[in-house]
Each structure stands twice: as structure tokens, then as C-alpha cells.
Amino acid sequence: MKIDFNNVDLSNLNSYKEKSLEAFSSLMNKDGEGNDFLGWIDRANNLDMEEYERIKKASKKIQGNSDCLVTIGIGGSYLGTKAVDYAMKGYFPKSDKTELIYAGYQISGEYLYELLDYLKEKEFSINVISKSGTTTEPAIAFRFVKELLEEKYGKEEAKERIFVTTDRQKGALKDLADKEGYETFVVPDDIGGRFSVISAVGLLPLCAAGIDIDKFVAGFRKGIENFTKDSFEENEAIQYAAIRNMLHEDGKDIEVLVNYEPKLKYVSEWWKQLFAESEGKDGKGIFPVSVNNTTDLHSVGQMIQDGKRNLFETVIKVQKADKDLTIKEDSENLDGLNYLAGRDMSFVNEKAMEGTIIAHVKGQVPNILLTIDDVSSESLGELFYFFEIVVGVSGYMLGVNPFNQPGVEEYKTQMFKLLGKPGY
Image 1: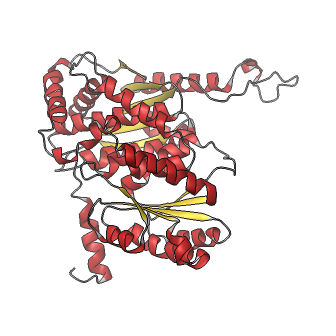
Image 2: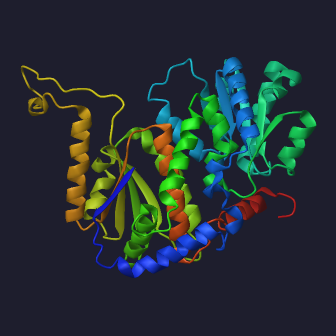
Image 3: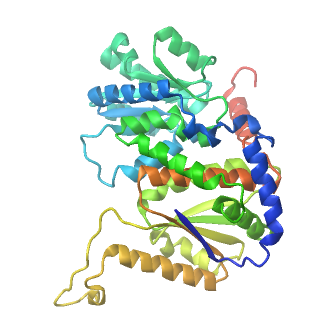
């Protein structure tokens, strides 16, 4: 993984160096706000190996008896998983793999109705993920999907198909799991949801889907090696956090994450949650948005090129395409593409990216280029860890607690009042 800051004016960067190192020190020493939720920093090097082996065993069981695993959760309980799953499974996945289906991340009755109808003809299991078990969206989904599971298989077999990832000791879901005899895995007390993909929250469904979680963990370990160095010059995560804050203080209030490989669509969605929930507090924060190019160059690209100059871009480049096609010469050349004959599509895509960066920089949009080797579980693990370190440092530099999310409670309060929930 490499990061290139050549398309950013760095003349003022030195004035942010000390502040970024202080923020990094608070993160690593675990003495800043939210320090109770920093277990993710060294989690990959300190896995509970007994649970890790149970994850692999449960995954084989799921693969052996289920066409689908319904993973029920919201926010960090599904986004990291979906990001890796979507990136790794291919655009037209083979039917011999256990399909991950996501539920409980919204309250659409139409979606849930169609999901239940789809599952009637499938062999399936459930992985419900919730710290408390009472979060509205997953709780509703679990009630309906569990009912179908028990109707289909009977209560005794159904309990062998329900896997619960929840608090180690307490909560409504933990109580239910103990009562019914469901196998349980742990949502760690010291890891917040948006950082939790390195725990059973992400590792169980990813392993069940056939993704090599050993390599995914190895990517996180590589991230630990590269991005926990206490050196501004040697740690690109610290540099990136400092540059984000420098740009922000220069009036750049929006960061656009850009990819040129559609497989990374949900990596962008995970990234948006990570930065929005971490930094958006106390009237502060850099607003995270994403685009999928070249598709969005024909829509949002107009705003980025010529709109208000309050944004900067971080572009993710994939160094090596896993699969490719070569453009052939056509005798009639009616489409005018013969000038590309002999070129691979990945080459054309790369030149589109390079041309867009040149155009946007000319349009006074600072650009940061982040290159990953490939779209593999190991590369994604390292990328996730990089962004997690960045958001911790950047949040502390902004003067907020990057590890809580008090604002998400307000909508629940107002919704519960409207629904007439007791106590509201």
C-alpha cells in the first residue's frame, strides 16, 4: 500500500506536525477521550484463538447445511462485512458458495417481506449481531426471520442454525441465547461497532462466505506494523490525518472518497460510517462522501470539477486487476475505438483516473492518491486498519472524541416517542 500527496500543497504541513504526533501519542497510549474503545488497535495480534477456531468450525457447519447465511445487524455490525464480502465475491458469484444476505439494517417492510419469500425456498442459517439485542432494526428483522426458521426446521433444528454475536455477559440477546442454547460469539466491550470487523462481528460471516479470514487478519497485522510507528516521516497514516486537518482549516469541509473499481463500492460505505460517526460532533467534522468512477464522472463529476471549492479527494487505485480484457481492432471501426486496439481495459481505466486527477487538480481540488496492491482480503485488511488509525488521529486533532456517537441516539428518542414506546 502506498500513498501519494503530490497533488496537495504541503507548504503549511509542518505547522500540523506536532499536533498530529500528540494526537497519535494519545491514541497509542490510550489516554485520550474514548480510550475504553481502543481494543481494535492491537486486536489482530491478540485474537481469542479459542473463539477464532470456533468461528472456523461454525463456518464449516453453515457451509455444509445452508445456501444462505442471513446476517442481521446495523451500522458497524454489517458494513465492514458487506464491504469485504462485496469486494471479494465477484460481480456474478457462483452458486456453490454460501450467500451472505443482510437484514436488520433498515426498517423496510417491503424488503423484509421479499427476503422472507426468498428464504422459503432456501436452506439458511442466521447470524444475529447486536450488543444489546434491543436495537430496533435488527430486533425486528430477527423476530421475523427466526419465526420463519423455526417454522421451516422446527425449534430444535432451528437453534442449531442460529448464531448469536453479542455481549459476553449481559443483554436481552445474550439472555435469549443462553435460554435457547444458541452458539454465541462476542462483541468486544472495548471495540466500537464501526471498528468491529476484526472481531467475530465480521470474521464469522466472512468465513462462512468462504473468505480467507487468516489473510484478512494478516492484512490488519501488516497495518499494525506499518501504521503504528511513532514517526511523522515514516507513518503515512499520521501524515494523512495531518493533511486532512490542514485542508479542513483551509476551507475544505468535504472529503470525497473515489474508486475506479465497482467492487469497492461498499468499502466506501464503510468508510463513510467510520469518518462520519467518528468526527461529526460538536459542530465539527469533515463531511465524508463517495463516488464510483467513471460512472459518477457523468453526474457528480460536474460538481467536483466546477462547483464550490470546499472539497478534496482521496482516490483509491488498485495496482493489479485480477481479471482483464484486451480491446481488439475492428475492421470497420464504427465506434472509433481502434486507437485503443491492443490496450487492456485496466489501462484505459487507469488513464481515465489519471486524466480526472489532472482535471480536478487544475480545478483547484486537492487530490490524495492511495494505491492498494489488489482487491484481496489481505489488502482490504491493511486498508481498513490504515483508515482506522487515521480517523483516531484526525478526530483528536479536530478536538472530538472519535469513539462515541451520541448524535445517533436523538433520532431513536424521537422515533420512540412517535411510536408510543413505554418510557418515551
